[in-house]
Length: 253
Image (cartoon, rainbow, N blue to C red; front, top):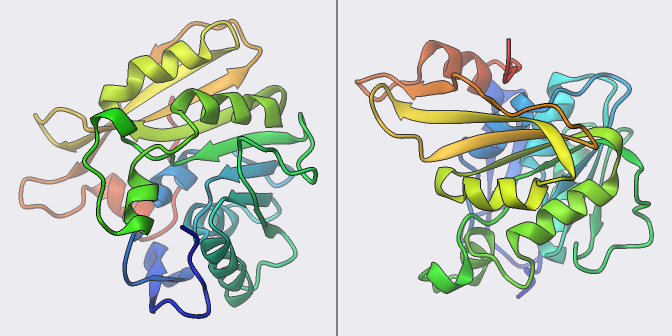
């Protein structure tokens, strides 16, 4: 179900210590730390052209653009209401020259998106397989958390299609979906880096960042990862500079 951006109740929030402002729905999916960390991990430079697949209200796109002056980002968002909110957020942050949003479905590639035209692809896909999930009764929240017609493999396929040769994809996902991610990339991308996001010291990772280079045959690297929180629940020092100050998060030294 598509949201009507003119009718839904929204809140005005801030990311990266106020460097990014974000209007988002009060009900349904609410931006947490995942898109901020995703954007921090994308190794984009000033000349890169990035596609943000499933861009929602634009949180990851905005954070990346705020951190990397000069890069351009195109968001693809299936929900037209969220796409409209994303365009409003781009304007509110004064980034119309470098950011845009296309309303469309990755299973039916919009004509405006030419294969092989991006140097970087990033995504924060729905984390749960439909067959294993108990969907939220709130449609917008369910569509953000549970896979619909597009499977995780479809998200990977689309990202690789959009990337030029040796282009880089960066995904954030659940740690227990790592096998699915690796299977979808097999024989098509290499130099894979798996970067665990530890909720606290001594706790198993629930989230991972995964990065891969299209057409590469380089071996996989299991990185040290990042501890997100101290024992008292506060952000770790590294997480703090990423989430509050917009620092980059290199996945390998």
